[in-house]
Image 1: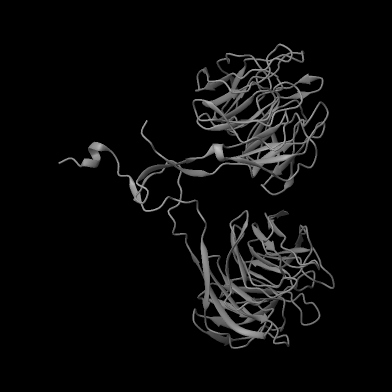
Image 2: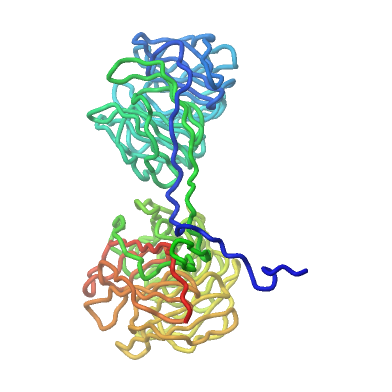
Length: 612
């Protein structure tokens, strides 16, 4: 017999409350077994159930080593050199201890084989209060105190230490974690107490989002994309604060039961261990165990249908573009106008500098970092699409001529690839696909200042192919799209001086089709999103003052939504309908270039389904 659900459709979930946005995981600390020797400034490695704590201060500097089995600590063989404020890496049975203070500052390095310590080659720079992480055969010692703060970073290969790239901010008493190719260091003092966070990619350190609570004498457990920082001292107090790092930002999640600083760490971001330390009452032997608590809420998922039994309503979770807003981001390093951009969100993009400079800059949602240098310096709204690690740029102007040159970007360097078939500049601005599948539409091909084109070229990752023309010849349009078979071009300047269009055309892989127009005809605008859902923003409606308008596309028609903070034209941008970026442009009149960055965010929302 056929099931009713097979005949009539699928089952709609019944919930007593609406779904909510993901509030993230929380966690809690609970009591574990006390150490045998109360102390602080010790180091540690291992897991929550197999941890090793060593060194520290009682207040004398000691080499005491203890092993934790998940419930109690057992004394074992001491370090050969008793010390505190030391760095550590490795595991319960294969650990590395390096640096510290005896006093004075020490360069001593020792390895642990599960039962005893052996001295090996020293650090090049004796120091203490440094960040340490990695394994027994591949470790990092970063920054620290050596009679003054040092930015020195050393890498251990299992037999010797080698100096590598310095941190951006020299400091001591930091937390850290990771490997020799992917690490993180946070907090500390310079001597000013700081919440600064830096990430390590194996060759360089990059500043990123600060801790919510600036502090020193804290510790960390986890890896560079998922770590917790706990305990420490602010300028006024010892704290038990615990913050969780998700690869881009910090979130406060839980406090110690007993606040303290300079504890020993072990474990991961979800199962961590903090032991010993000191606070206002003195030196303690307390051990606390941390466990993450996953979110229990019914989390919003786009396209989800459910029945709310409390309000007796059917609802759908959709992207709520009308409620989206623009917010200020970090200013670009220089004022820019007619450049190229490739962005996948409001926190991931690479943007060209002002010509004749061929430099680019990458954006992570918090700050700008110098990127690779293009082989060809260009201007005049050249084509760009992709992300900060996989982009393609093409066309533009290399005065006095337009260019067909195309280059791909891998996150660090540019490589020349096959040229466009037609040299052109002032192409449509916004996402046009990916580094391996894109559409480059419209643009100026001739010598005149008001020329436009109906040209469209498809990129397959290795070559450009001319496709069917657009219906309306134009330049300086906006664009949004996902691939070389799905794109949308909107607005732009017509060939007649001062003439602008609201025309919108959609590409399906074989032809362009005219659809509903923008509400406001304009040129020099940009887009974000795809052919089903997107936004078009900024531009020039009738010379200065320029436009701050944002219009949302729902796959059928345009509607006005929240304006940008600053009216402008020639903006560069990209991203999605829920996470977009707008950069630079003219803010008032010719020559008045801007370094402004604005970030667009639209969230999911539960909408009641009504009969019509």
